[in-house]
Every structure is written in C-alpha cells, then in structure tokens.
Amino acid sequence: MGIKSRFPLDSRNSIFECLNQGADGVEIDVQMSKDGILFAFHDAELSDLTEGQGLIHDFTADEISAINYKGLFSGKESLQRLDSIFNLLTEFPEAIITFDVKLYTASTYTPYQQAVAESIVYFIEKNPRKNLILVESQDTSFLNYFHQLSPFSPTYFYTSTFNDGIKALNTFQYQGLTMDLQNISKEQVDTLHAGNFKISLWNVQTAAENSEALEMNADYIQTDEIKDLLQKAKKR
Image (tube, rainbow, N blue to C red; front, side):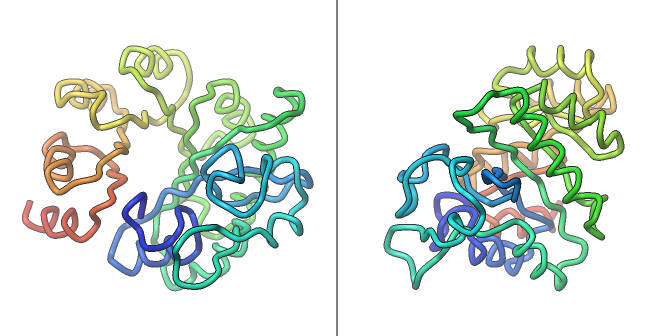
C-alpha cells in the first residue's frame, strides 16, 4: 500500500487492505530480530516510524512486538512478526508474497547475512505457500548464500542500474531484477524477457505510472494505486 496507505507501511492492516482490494500479492520488507525472528518493517532506524529507537536487530522478538507505529492512524498498530501475518493469509492462498530483505545490523555483517538467509529459508520451507514467495535484495552476497540454501526459491536482484543488473544475472542464478520504474526502459525490459528473466517494478505511485509499467510488460508491478492498476490490467 506504500506511502498513500491510511495504515503504516508493512503493518498487518496495510497488507490486508492491499489484498482485499484485489491485488495478486504484496511486497513485505523483512528484517530479523536479535533472537532470529522475522519481522515486517521497512526502515533501518525504528524511531523513523515507531515509538521505539534503534535497529530491529538490537531487540528480541518480544521487545519488538511491544513497539507501536507512531502517526495519525486509526488505532494502535504494533510491529508484526512475519509468522503472525502469514497465519492470517489463509483466505488468500494464491497471493504472491515478495520479501524485500533489509540487512541492517551493528554486528558482524557476513554472519548476520547468513543468519538472515537461514531464517528466511526455514520460514519458507515450513510454509505451504513456499512456491509463491519471492526473495529480493540489493546484496548479491546475501542472495548467493540464500540461493545455495534454497536453490528453487525465486531470487531477484534489487539494482539501481540496468547494467549492474544484467551483469549480476549473467553471473549468478537469479530469476530477475527489481528496479525503480524511472530507471529502466521498455527496450531493457524486452532484453530481460528475451533472456528468460523477469522484472519487478517499484516506485509506481500514480495512475500514469501504472500505465507506463503496463506498457513495459512488467512481470510484477509494486503500485500505490491498486484499483487503477487492476482496472487497466483487465482492459488489456
């Protein structure tokens, strides 16, 4: 639901409002607590969006679950464990879920990367919708380790430039790229499709940008204007 949602980004209410509007799926930002539990949260610093302070990885799952979002929302919204969200997704059995993995830590980086990858693999493997979960990251080291552990899980390299993305796709075994709509052209999308790769577009915030993303034949569109996108997609 992005920045236009009446609920906090990554909150349970935001995710379910998105799916209830008819979206095929949602993108959820994923981080890991100090004790290895996965949470849905976007920013590095808790104080940006919540009443807490510090990094998700600084706290245990119980401590994080007691933190509320701040802002003018309808009622208190606490940070959500990923398993709690998935326990409520049974009414949307075909929903595609993209994990945008955020690797924010003050600890040693490589062991942390690996621990996050292991936690996500464990989560996916025990989940009945595991074939509908995509994993994206800006970090190729993380993606490569994750792919070793879970070779059949779709992985997407979240890149800011097409050239870096193509280089990664030609070097590693990723299914596709995640890119800002503003940083890719229709010709580049065609190049990806010709190589049997997929593209997921984000920063699609307006009706005009929905039209642009559809004209590009993007495989996934992460939009803030869901109803408009669905109406246009049905007419194609």
